[in-house]
Image 1 (cartoon, one colour):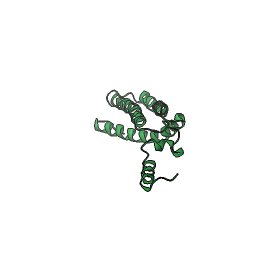
Image 2 (spheres, one colour; image 1 turned 90 degrees about the horizontal axis):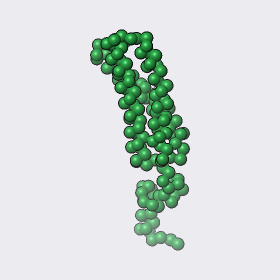
Image 3 (cartoon, helix red, strand yellow; image 1 turned 45 degrees about the vertical axis):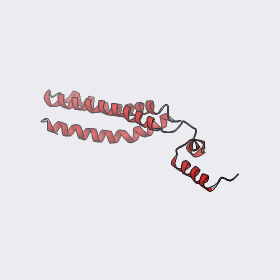
Image 4 (cartoon, rainbow, N blue to C red; image 1 turned 180 degrees about the vertical axis):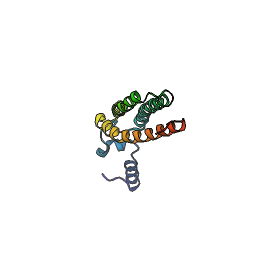
Length: 139
């Protein structure tokens, strides 16, 4: 059963754009309802943003205590102990955010954690080091 040319063109456009119910019937898009949605990405950004804010706040608090009170030996243990917790926290936040939307949330969360954490540690430590220099500390 052939479709008229204008209906064939419309169906092709819908399949390419990924909109409409036809795209969910296409095997390339996977099982309906089990794909990364916009709501899932908003939840992922929100959860990972909370984790990032908490660690930057912790590191900034450590810097303020180091500059003003000078407890050098104890604060370095807290800082270096928090670095593995960043990996675990990003993994748990990503897993919790992706659990309803993806078929393999642990694998996706692990991959996101391995990508996001080094970038966040570099940017966070750079930001906190600049903050330390601004409030009168030294390297």
